[in-house]
Length: 359
Ligand SMILES: Cc1cc2nc3c(=O)[nH]c(=O)nc-3n(C[C@H](O)[C@H](O)[C@H](O)COP(=O)(O)OP(=O)(O)OC[C@H]3O[C@@H](n4cnc5c(N)ncnc54)[C@H](O)[C@@H]3O)c2cc1C
Image (cartoon, rainbow, N blue to C red; front, side, top):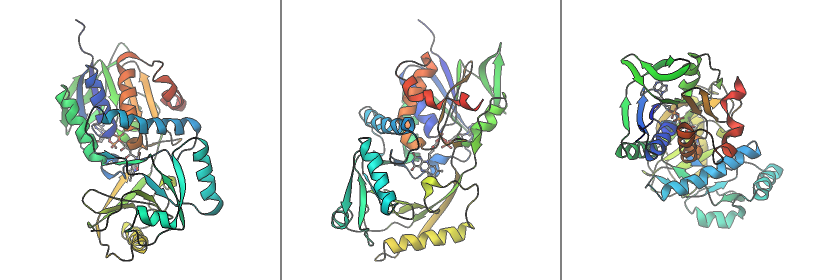
C-alpha cells in the first residue's frame, strides 16, 4: 500500500478550506495551518457570478465556477443559495453593451422592466426602470462556507491548526519538504500556499515573484430589517445583499467590482455615511441603521487574474480575487494537480492563470 501524500496547506480560509476538503476526499493526509490573521473571506460580499469579466478565459472559468458549486452541493450541504442577481449598474449604451456581451456568450440573463422588478423585489423602495436579471447567479455565506468545508475535511481525516504563522519553507535537495513556524517545522510531501494577501511575502522567502496589488475595501452591514430582499442587487452605486439575519451588506465604495484604488477614497466614517445615504435612498420606506463596518484587503495578483499552479518542486500556490465564485472549482482543480500534476481536466481551466506569467 502506498503511503498517503502529506499536504500542508498554509491558509485555512475559503481557498484553503475548499482545497483541504477535496484533498482529504482524494485520500491525502492534510494539515491546515492558519495564522488567524486578516482574511478576505470574512469580509467578502459573497456573490457567485460571471457577469463581470475581462477575458474569454476568465469568463469561462467563472461560469465553470458556478457549475462546480452545483456539483459540490450534490456531495455536501453548504451555505450557497441560487438567489439570482438584478443589475442596473450601467445606464444607456453601457447597459445594452453589458447585456449583449453576456447574452452572446449564452450567459443566463434577460432584461426586465420596472413592473417585473417590483414583482421580484416588492420591498425595494426605489425601483429602477430596467435591470438585467442574472438567473443563474448565487450567494454564499463565505465564512460559514469555509468552516463547513473545513469541518467536512476534518471528518475525512484532515487536521486544522490555528494561530500558526508560517514564516518560510524547508527545502531538501531543491524540493520543498515542509514549512517553518515559530513553533517548529511541519513536514510535507507537498505544500499549498492559500494565504490570500500573505502569499506574496511568503513566496518571496524563496525568491518566487508573485506581485500583488493593494486593494483595500470597506464593507458595511446594517442592523437587521424586516423587509426582504431576495436577489443580489448590483445597483447604480454598488452591490447590496441581505444576509441570513436580515441585515443588508454593501461595499462603501461606488462600483466596488471595478474599484482600483490603493487607498480608501475617504475617511471610513465619511465613506460609511455616504454609503448609508445611498442605501437609504434605495429603501426610503425603511429606517436603516449601520451596525458594523469591516476593512479588508482583497487578494489581487498584479494583473487582476487568479494565480494558481506549482511554483517549485513540492510547492503550489493559489491566490485570487473572486475566490468565492471560484472556490468550489479551485478546490477540485488544485487537489487534482497537487496529487497527480496537471491533466486534461485541469489544464484547460488553469493554463491562462499560471503564476509563472510573473516570473
Ligand atoms: C470586501 C470584499 C468583497 C468581496 N466580494 C467578493 C464577491 O462578491 N465574490 C467573489 O467571488 N469574491 C469576492 N471577494 C474576494 C474573495 O472574498 C476572496 O478572493 C477569497 O475570500 C480569498 O480567499 P483565500 O482563502 O484565498 O484568502 P483569505 O480569505 O484572505 O485567507 C487567507 C488565510 O491565510 C492565512 N494566512 C496568511 N498568511 C499566513 C501565513 N504566513 N501563515 C499561516 N496562515 C496565513 C490568513 O490567516 C487567512 O485565514 C471579496 C473580497 C473582499 C475583501
